[in-house]
Length: 251
Image 1 (cartoon, rainbow, N blue to C red):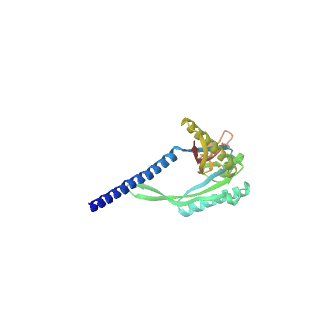
Image 2: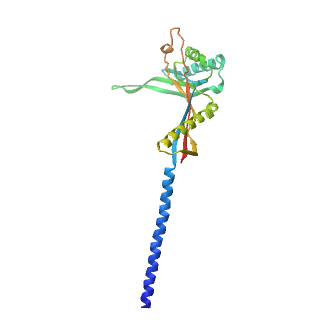
Image 3: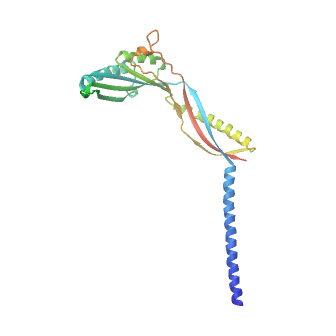
């Protein structure tokens, strides 16, 4: 009888531990769930966007020479002479510094033709040398393009206007982005019948200037010349932008 009682007591004790362990596990699980719900219910995440429209202060011009000739050597030699003349013009007449003139593309390649009788044949060679020129006197961009064309440039295009140093506008654009985030978060809190608390975290996306592209592919400068025979280029505006990812407390 005593043995039976002891055995029964042992079973009862084990059962109690099992039930207690289950209950304790449930308590911990309940706490974790409550904590997760609390986090989800008591914050709001928004993206604030800031933007400034600014007059550009620099333009990047693509100025190139394309040359065709019977031989690769002739194409390269003719092309090199024209590029040398244009480079001298930019440096001496237009006072553009060496650091603002960069070769971005150069090639000499065969020009192929094909017919059924002869198959693929080389018919001459094409040479290209492309310069990207940084220029800051935006009122004279059209004149510069005309001068480059007169010196032998026959492929001018993609004038890219930008703000050379956008860091001067960082504080302003960040303030605009934060104000935008405040408005969005406030509207969400109001719609949820809650009040907005303190900022919990902020992270910033890219900041910089978005250039306005003035596309002007000029195999012949006459294609874009006005009645007076000069090229007219309008700088327009560029946009300095940033984004802030902001997390607010909800009360």
